[in-house]
Image 1 (cartoon, rainbow, N blue to C red):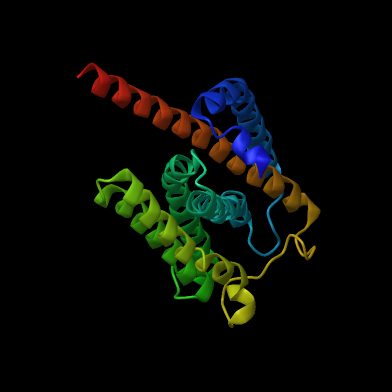
Image 2: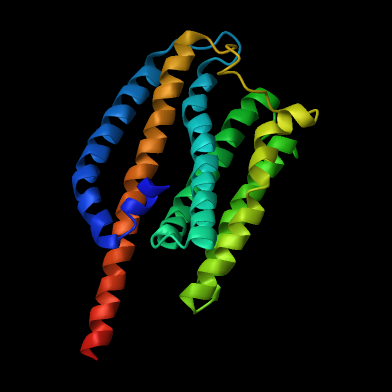
Length: 236
């Protein structure tokens, strides 16, 4: 916990991110280059054909979407319980990226579903709970913008984020709790062939690095905007 508060000061965060951001950008570009190369050069699957390549976009997007929400939930706890100075800023900054990853996961899943299932959409437990995640993201962002008082908005948004976190385990275990059309977990279980596993893991890393990079930039932007408003108010 002390580590989290060590960089709670915005000035300290800015100094740390100055050094970390170039490394994050480089790591993100490298991971995407390697992941896309591996994904484009793997042989077609014996059942899915070339449609299997959509997995390298869909699964990382879905993983990133739930990971981002997990980050928002952690920041919300830090805000409500420990009053971490940057937690509200970090949580709010993460939400648009989570919504984007969720939308990308839904779109790529629909593209894969058409040739595999014969339809773009079914009201499957996994798909429905994942669609609900997108609505939760929208509601979270709308709540931030609906309340003018930032302190009240932060508290209300943090409570909503924690309530919405109930949906994350539902997404994760929906294929086990209900009889669903969506396939179950295949990475840890070893059901995925190594030739497909390598590019999938690299692309998952690339998506998470992309989020870390964009999240850092957005937090820095929010800090600078707050400083600018303070200077303008002081000048007035």
